[in-house]
Length: 635
Image (tube, rainbow, N blue to C red; front, side, top):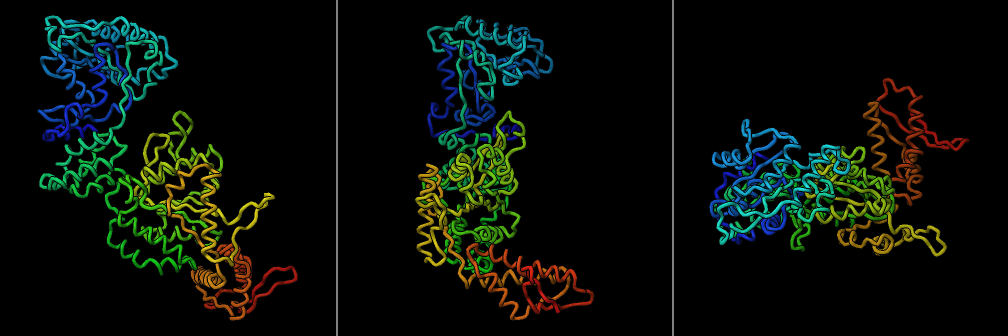
């Protein structure tokens, strides 16, 4: 971060199109407004960020301390004293005249620019700052979050220190420096304040701010859109071609940069600009720079030409693995094309960081929902290992949500992160499958609202995982079975029903589930029209699935034993009849039957059959013995 800030300090100052009031951070405006009536300030939140700061007639990005000084100096403050628990006390800014004045007024004994100071001595400095009339000054207590281990369980020394700070806040008075012209704005009475810099307001004892009316809390939030827009205008010259770009192109760059960095601090915008500068990324490709920062990957497979070629010829590739689901496969390909063209969420004013694609696969069990997710992974990324699967039946209890995101801070294992957030950080370009989503606890489903809308999740460690380059796939069996008036589970759709009827009933059941059962219609709204309903496996498709699975068995025998396995026509026909007789469990049911009726007896027969020297085997017979156990005859 320090390197980035130094680089930003070297930026050429550019005049801002907005007024000084607009570019001044909100907390600075509150601070300067309250200086006549508040003696201490707790500055909490985004304190390690960069801030828009006046510089050479324009503005630049600077760390908090420099921003603070840039706004206090015009109010006739002569210097700051900065304390942190490690180094001690030092004057700021580090200029000879400032150091000399601070050393004289506070009898500083500096070594390498700092003076080691205990909490007890810091109380004396605090008291002297509050009453100093020779020159306006302020005390900044940096890393104040680290002054005590537990703010609600202080030891004796820590308690005395904070009680003394409270007393000083109440006893202090606004001062007018000696010799100041009271007729001028800088001659007005203001406090010499103490500023506590903390990560969270609760890092200090709560009574310090509650019991003293002279202590104000200033919350530093992440920068809003207007602030990011102004920062983007300053950072543009680090992107190749920006200075020579047309005015409208530069304006579009700034707007895109501000929109894509929603939820990021300004220091992150500076880091992104540094990455762009080092990698020669042009200002028209600012999305690549943002993506590189968020996911840590410079190569974006979504923008590769070969991906468009793969998807253009995807139908036969997918149908080789997912049989008999032409409507579902066609719609899935349409959504992929939309994702590749970057048009996901294009109807909204800003699609933000939403996932590349969202697919909701619904329909009977065993019809290819999970297989289609795997096939899409192979198609897009060329590697099924980019496929991340979560069985949502494992998250039926509310407390299991900690597995996805990690335990909250303070709980055992919070520093390990969550299974979902860790997986997406490791493989940002992936297909993430949430299998049987209706079995998850409703409170866990709320987490998907943030993923679907903002494309990011923060785990228990405070680290953010970005889903903007992932495809999310949800699967569900909703609508296939419903409860009748007696509370009995009955089948809502039949294999003989037309696909239009199956689709209408399944969609209706999904809508009822989210709207009325869960009372979460907002989840359904974010899924939108991406619900893809699979139909039942027909006898013809069941035969095709059987043939493909049988080929897999033959190939496995060849690979394992170097033997060509053949089946007599009568055996093959009998086996097909048995395996496809009941298609209520889909392709998975066909596979289970094939394993039970053929693979198991085949393994038993081969185990006893002398294979040495054999290069071919024929299954000549298939029969059921007196114990109703299937047997095969090998030749």
